[in-house]
Image (cartoon, rainbow, N blue to C red; front, side):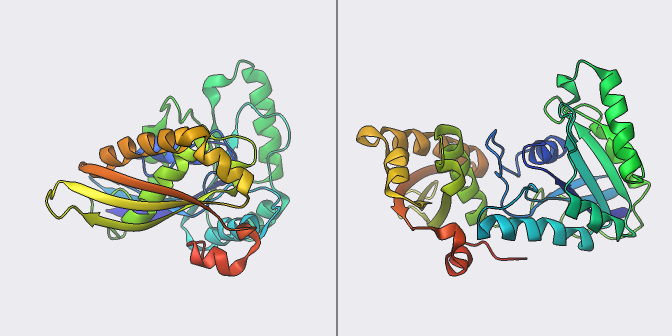
Length: 297
């Protein structure tokens, strides 16, 4: 039996969460085309007959503009020191240097094996350019190996796991083998709601929103029905108007999509009570960040 922890690191929107979901065969991390979707470290647990691998999806690395972003960046870099393998993911379609210089500095100080994972190869047409690009990256840092994949298409995932096993040591299963993630129920539900806000809203709203699940209670008369109360938090009144929409249409749309997703997640009927409130500049307020669950782990 082999086991270990593997960190997935890289810039925003390279596909780390999509890769994790595809590898596990179920949704443990929300995804969106909007940048900075992942705000916490999400642990996805891969199990087969002879190994357990805990993949840690980290927030995307980017230049922060607020305290939440700075905290996410610190969290992603701190994760490098607590794992057995590091996988640096890049977008195969990009042509500019994808490496964060601080990330490279941290990697150079590690004794941990570091792999390069090139994602979105399904969208590549010029493989000669891609090969030259990857060779240039390998000159920047001595990766153990390079993996090519399309997380969206599920390409080469079994081969990647097979090769990663060679670098893991014998060890116990850290989690029950039927567990896909260790995230608490309140957190998972809040993330599903936030995902729907990201899908439906525009402009500055996706970056300014968080979701707080305040209660999950069974119905007194119907044990197959859950009542979930949640609050969508934004930073400005103009954002609240967008989230609610004309006549409450946007809020209803978000709620309907989220309820169906939560129904699929929990396997039980859900009554979802959503509200929206303004907490000014919460992303720059350490006290508010702590209140909303953004604690440095």
